[in-house]
Picture 1 (cartoon, rainbow over the protein chains, first blue to last red):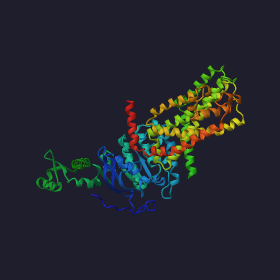
Picture 2: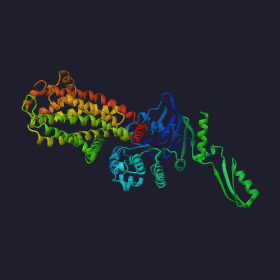
Picture 3: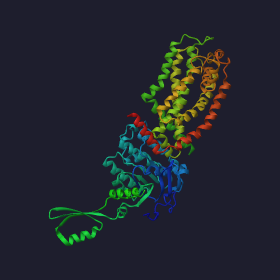
Length: 310
Length: 280
């Protein structure tokens, strides 16, 4: 199910050569004592791609991200992030990464603008003609929707605002690669929508590569160029949401109205079923709906199968 | 780039210093010890150091600056480090290019600044309560090398202790050894009045030597007679403090690097969960 890797040929002049993937993970293994968490993870990310990493709790999503971020030593395998081994990443390498973790509570006494200005300062030395670093504080506040809270003490922000700040800090250095660990927990629907727009903006305008974990499958479907499902210590599925649902034996649900009654039928070959339906009843059929299995069903199915094997 | 980084670190320290000095709770903490101290000085204002004409109040005021400095440089350093590890500040520094260097510079500025504030808060009002303090050029020159050297001797140890504690609350137990050290380091009465073996213990630690140096700066030379060997042993003081600095600076980077390398998102999250379950 691995897709062939073709790197985009736009955005020249960046640090990573055109042909090189932004992330390359081969046979990544990780054990805590005798407990193996990752037993051979493989995947690749191209520039400007949004990868969504799904998986049950405890499957090793955070462990994987922490290894890629250079915060955790792996037990085995090869990992290349922006051309370097994260365990030996330099400060210049670090400057090209953005990190949004699950729970930050830091810098509670600082004011929003103050902290963004301060942290942005560390990136000035790594500014390039193609990518000016850091992001101007006022623009950044605008982009994440915190303009009105610029002078508020961080400890006083609401949960959703705090999360926006975390995202702002994650992108203040205008990263080439951004890690987002459950970024929208605590967001209301509007904030979630704004966040999705922001991610699209980052990938479209800045050509940022994004690796994101979430438990929200709608979010995954909306954002992902590619979905990776991590279960049983390895990647059990890798592809677009569409490709994944095709993989689950293409069962689809057909609903229609006939003489005032509602009918539901599940079939592996929905197209021929619908054809027959029209041959039989013609115009009497109204309100026809065909739904391929949703990402949620696909996900549940794939994870259950993988856990059954293990 | 070096210059830029240094500026970032200094700015960081100044911002955090301003935050702590405009925060009611923190401010109360800085002022409480000096206020208690002044109260004590007032009570003993008529007493003199045994075997001399010098007021015990003057002796204690000057010596207790050593205690305040150790409290700041050792206990606060350890507590700040534990706190910053607990809430993710340290991890944030790690996720930022050169962030750890900026963090350390900032912390040094903060701790030196806050310690200076609490020493001044004790010294200035105390000067009016007790008799017999003086400061001449030699004394001032002594302070110029003594105070930085003392901070250098103590802060690395404080940072290392901070690496060993898992949360800020347990780090507060550091108050106990510091209080114990205060009791045996000749802060409120001359060291010579203690049994010989205790004198030996006290002289292994920086607090006694710092106190000694401070007394030589602020008190008349006649008081040297009340010291252990009857003189200001400034050379020995410098020697002991330099030894502590060298050992501390040799060990601290390794210990801190080890501590920092263990920091990750899940480590912070786990600590947060423990903190939450304690709160319930």
